[in-house]
Image (cartoon, rainbow, N blue to C red; front, side, top):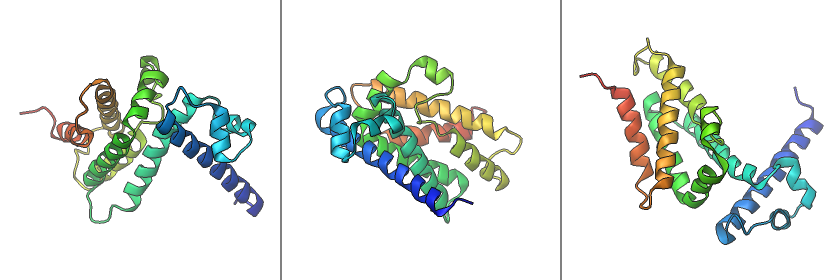
Amino acid sequence: MMSPTTGKREQGKFERRERLYEAALALFRTQGYEATTVDQITKQAGLAKGTFFNYFPTKDVVLRYLGAREVGRLGAATLANGAGLTSVGKLKRLLAALAASLERDRELVCLIFRKGISVGDLLAGDAGGFSIQPTASLLLRQAQRAGEVNSELDPDMLAAALDALYLQQLVRWCETDTPYPLAERLTGILDLLLIGITA
């Protein structure tokens, strides 16, 4: 069990990280990623310049945190507030909520995929925090127990396939000149995966 002092210290670290993240995001949105300096971020957050490097080694890491934070936040919300939904329904809700969140910050999300995440990173399983595989695996296991998904299939392999399709769609969405509705595409790939390709 965590002592009250340790708990306060951890909460303080979390709050400082969030302040830096929110300040960086606000500056990235208003003046652009390249024009934003670490000094500006720490000033906006009301923290000492050196504090930034305790939480984010580089500005690129702030961008990667965007993905991890949104996937984590929305995944937890989907799991906690899914009363009345099937597990597959929860997975669809997660993809739709992620799409809505990412669409609000399309420029930054695309910058992450252009600047911060290489093909090598993706092949190594590092999707800059954007991976949905752990949450998808959990929901697919629940779906198997409920009889929604074939119980003979490996849920981790299904989650990996869904994650790969999801990441591929994010890259395509970022590379297109005319953005399309991401939620429709993401829930559509889930439907395709669930239906399968058998006649």
